[in-house]
Image 1 (cartoon, rainbow, N blue to C red):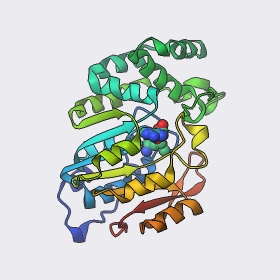
Image 2 (cartoon, rainbow, N blue to C red):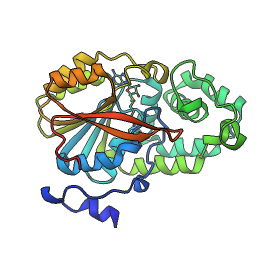
Image 3 (cartoon, rainbow, N blue to C red):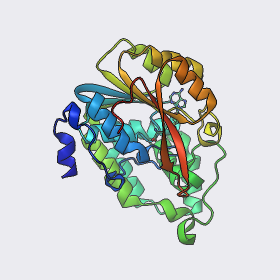
Image 4 (spheres, protein in one colour):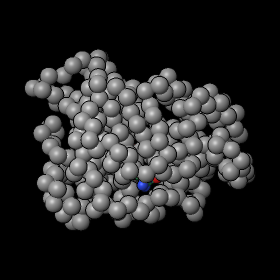
Amino acid sequence: MHQLELLEPISRKDRYPIVNIATVPQRSPFRYAGGKTWLVPRIRQWLQYSGGPDIELIEPFAGGGIVSLTAVMENLVDRVTMVEKDEGVAAVWKVILNGGAEWLGNTILKFQLTPETARDAILKASESLESLAFATIVKNRVNRGGILADGASFIKNGESGKGITSRWYPETLKKRILEIDKVKHRIQFIQGDAISVCEMNADRSNIVYFIDPPYIKAGKRLYRYSQVDHEYLFQVVNSLQGDFLMTYDDSEDVMKMAKNCKFETRLIAMKNTHHAKKTELIIAKDLDWLP
Ligand SMILES: C[S@@+](CC[C@H](N)C(=O)[O-])C[C@H]1O[C@@H](n2cnc3c(N)ncnc32)[C@H](O)[C@@H]1O
């Protein structure tokens, strides 16, 4: 029912379908610090307005890629390009998108997770692209908060004292990876710099961008690459022909940069992992599509 609603063309006047947050499928193989699964209902509304069958979505700070995966799997755009700088995260996307989904899924399924085997898998990361991809998946599941930044530590007690296995769902992970495999011909992955890819595509009008840079304050703790020239990013975003949606932590600096570019801003309430409410800023040229 819900799927049908999304696949039907939506006229401008009916473009605010009511979306229940419980309908957001978890499609990413990552549990991503700062991940945007919670924002998917809004992303759908935005893409029903700005996406379409001849539109490409670029996700320059892709991370766990939930927005790209949702856009492709729900046919909100024709194809997507994901860009990510982190070598480990990039290895996962490269392996899945270049024919290694079955291998990765089976390797996850066969793995007997203990602190020792996890350490061993992580130590072997440098042996090949495949080992790096697998090590990254393991780290993402055994590290506290899924944090992949260097120096992050293992979960101690985990859910109901299950320790490092508390976030290890091998069948689910394999299933998600195989679902991505089915749409891989519509996904391009670039290991590279987000801002450069935006600049390269700035003149193209049949593109939309979902831009989710590392948080200005918390980014350093969460990601290996967290330094972004935010002023410059805003300048580049201001030069894009295509539509965009950006998300940021709510701060005075960000508001100032958005105001200088005459972008619209709106605070959105979200629940974080501890179910405490916090707010996140969304920024766009035009937020008319927001109910
Ligand atoms: C806030 S996270 C994105 C989360 C993503 N939207 C999700 O839902 O999973 C920001 C990501 O940007 C990546 N990153 C940081 N600097 C980058 C750069 N210059 N180019 C590309 N990716 C970068 C980080 O490694 C991190 O994965």
